Length: 251
Image (cartoon, rainbow, N blue to C red; front, side, top):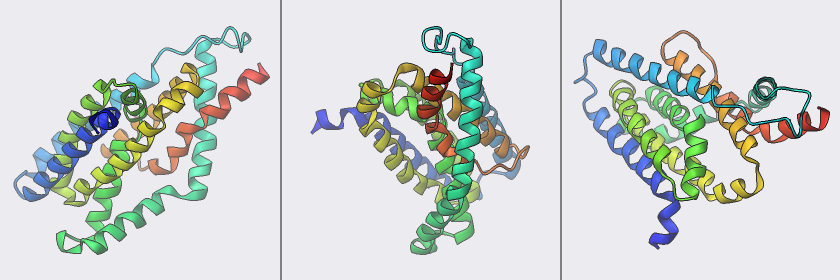
């Protein structure tokens, strides 16, 4: 049993931290003065933006063999641009944000006694996106499949602080995003070994870099600088699988 759960340790810790800290935050909803919660959330937003920028600046894989006409940096930029454009269009057509809102509303209707539906849905959706989009999630889940839980354990600390503050404002819906974290990261970890075996290291890098762009927008959303439907950009993270192959064929 322990051997079976070993690849999921990082995800289980992340799930537990988000759930527990989210519940604690919802109970101290009036205990954190607004100016402090806003200041802490701004600080966390800056950290999120930093994580995103750091991921975007990840070294581009060498493309000299498959695409000798393009430098590694330019190849990475093309993959990001095409992935974000195509993935966002797909996300808008499917409207992931709307479906996540409905999922939050459904959960709120079942758990309405814990708070208003609107705040529950907002907290559930906001935290689900925050904790499940980006380089740390994808890389962490895949790394956990090989027994390396460092990324997800680091992510758990950031998620714990963020959900504590967010749940003090938006309520218990933030805590229930832990179940989305468990399912999403669990699925990524489940297929992690297969992904590592099937996808090249460069493809995984491009997936992480593209996800990091979404993380940056998520941070600017929290700061109030932008109002982007980041959930609708989630498909962009998986577009590099096809885009890299296409660019290699063209160049």
